[in-house]
Image 1: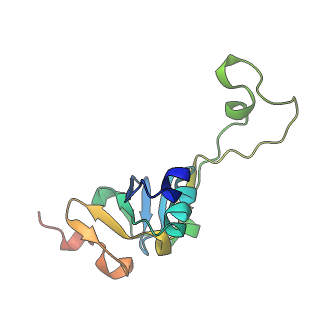
Image 2 (image 1 turned 180 degrees about the horizontal axis):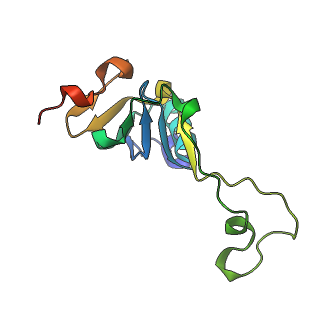
Length: 128
């Protein structure tokens, strides 16, 4: 956040594990927070992913299944206890960045801008 505040970041590029039809994006945990910071500092935020990542059967990000990982990834990192015994842990592997925070989605077919539901390439429209 500090380097964004200092104006040392001009643009953010992230990957994606899945893109919903409306342009919401699931990626590794923490991506949503970076997108919020970019928005707060007027920094463009782009997602770079192949069209195979777009899932038109999922209308929006709320429908993207999020993998929840084991608590011991947090409580027993590096081979020893890193948290008090019995502490409750919620450990999602991914988060969803809403389309409103995304400046564009870059695929092998170019840069797609909002409204993503109209501009993301449909499989049937792609060249063979």
